[in-house]
Image 1: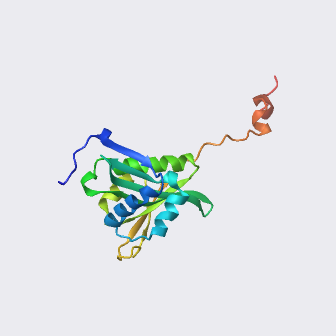
Image 2: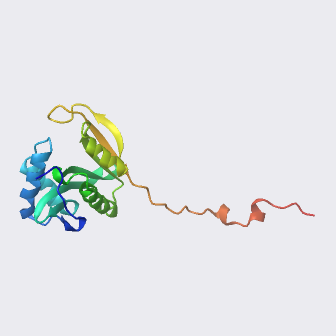
Image 3: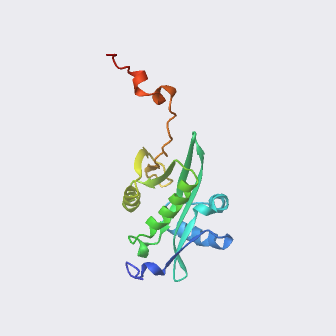
Length: 185
């Protein structure tokens, strides 16, 4: 395979995690592309509890990308978390990672998450650029975060809070002349 795989956008199929047959595909991609080793129990934790937050990308039947996420309460905030994102090298830079992440973020928003977080190696320029384009900010630097000794940035995407109508007090509903009486003539 060359540097970049040639394909039309319409040839890429995206699907939600649909059961145990997808697990080896996810594990293979993550194991070959990410620096952190994960046990099968880690994968199962995510895909069994949050299958709606796990997406896979296929090209002509071959799994070429995946995103694995979760969501839940964290310090009085309902938070989404992107645990793993992989697109194999020949398919990078063509919008697949953006599509995978966007699909998971959409589900998180619809489920009531207030924010999404993740960690990315400080040296992973592609990931940092991708998440920056999606609106993530660098919340903090985590020194020696990864097993390989590399630092990470914790990235955070904050969702706008829905506008809650203000309660109108009685004083605000009284006619203006009662609040500011006009001089009598």
